[in-house]
Length: 451
Image (tube, rainbow, N blue to C red; front, side, top):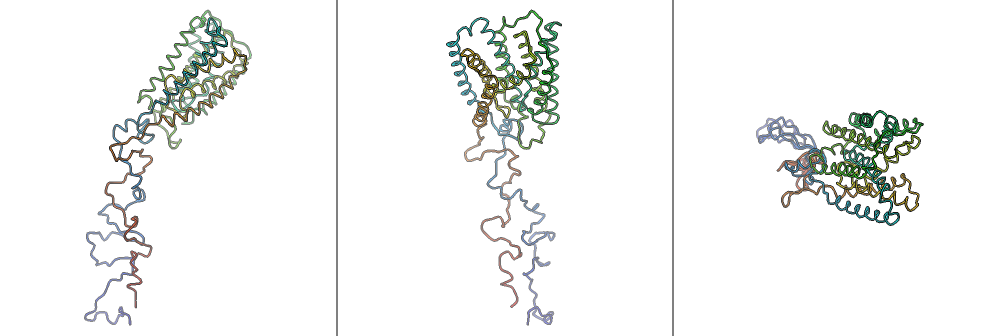
């Protein structure tokens, strides 16, 4: 007969034992401070509300991924905000080394040009060489500015050609007045691109390419040749124009070495999900960079018109795309990263000097080097330079005292594990663990079952 026969209930000496086969606990069992509101289900561990919420998946198993909280100094070094990027300053040694290579390459091309045609470095030919370098340098500086902002402006070439056509067509109204109106119109075009980029948070290359195609269509509709009417001849000040462009490009790049400015200018650099907006500060700096690049392109267009005196609309569309390719190639070869923010100081100017000397040297040798060919090769080399800059220019891992682990942004570690945090026995590699039967692995059914 079974021990739980109802005939024995109530008899002297009869004692009821708790049924350990069930998944619950006896109602009169001592709780040891655990509230009766604790709920236990098979496969889980009962946790009292007095000890806080049950461990969640986000706080379990993070022992290997724990990172120490960043210090205020580390947070100050993050390039945009604490949730993105790496703490620490960009390393500039890679830029210095690469600029030395560019300097040697430009020196070698200068020697080759002098050996092939020494007259190219004297008189009017030297003035034309300097003016062409100034025009390309202004466009490269404009391109480099938007590259650093993370929103490249591919319309700088067509803007320059359109500005040259407009200035030449209206130059009879006065040099200063026409140049000012041309600059304002180009600035308006830059504002249109900036609004498209920052308002809709779209890539700069896409918005600027659309505007560039619209400008190419406008240039193609100008069927007549435009001639500049005016007495000013920039050839007499070619050296000063070249020096001015060097100051603009190198000076702007030097300002980019200032950590807060460099960090703010590069906030539009792509991180995480591209749908995440980068904030009002990023939109402001990016918009100003795009507008400023259009203004520099307008200055290059005015100088181009004054240099050649006659602007052919038929070649304007092709020339605009060629200028864009050359400017982009010069900025990338100079060490400006295609991803934004990172760049050197003299790299863009040295790249422009090398490309200008290469074009003049191949012309002196009688070779047929098309601007599109040079632009394609420069962009290809520039992409390799971008990988070098990104690889060797990133901040070193910030480490604390000996034995401390390096800090990573909170975007990587979703939740910080508290010190001495409790883990349920089910997550330990040793000890007892619960299973789906709720018997705690002790074989209750087998040991306490009926006999």
